[in-house]
Length: 296
Image 1: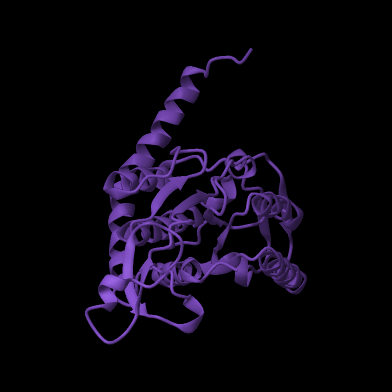
Image 2 (image 1 turned 30 degrees about the vertical axis):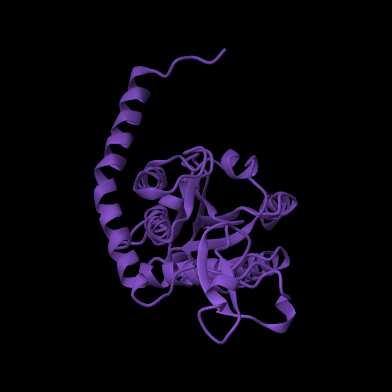
């Protein structure tokens, strides 16, 4: 039987929740600004496919056959026309933003990995919402919803949610679902292989946003340096000369990134690596382009 949280723990949890809530309006405003700037340079995701919503007319092609001809529209001119409907088989997008302790890392003057991941996902959610997509956050918001209410519900969950591993490991998705997952992907590659394998079994695919801090990428440390575990469990590693470990670190870091990229490609996902010292709009545009690509 679980015990009730102690008063001190409740106070700390309430304080953390209030801090997250206080940041939400600013994060949402930033996400909307980024979405607006990206929207100027991209076209919508609407495309022909199986559905019921009318999209456009196009000229008949020999391979179309006669049964798809829209005779009423064709009678108005000298050409045969096909009535195309909008693709509706994959109009639900599911998000997950890693909530692990390591995502709170940030170099001086830069946002944390968690904050940048939240902003990027909120911005892409805004763009997709404008295109009529239904949105949901794994383990946080239930069924996918469209419209302003759906967007705001998803945005709040992305900014303030827990992002627990169980949500991404035990997700029950509809067939052909599309996902956008934001993390630093520092878990073992085998962990992500198991997760992507489970998604593949459900017919799901999507994009992986790998958010990293420049210090992780560059390893600029020199001299006597102590590295502590992000979880705060007391584990630490002390280097008398941190620069002596730079070469080995960069080799391991590069190898891990290459393995992630190979894994994503193996399962038909797109891996996008984004540093927090670069504009968030670049990550949002890359995500939007990835989700606009036809499914294989």
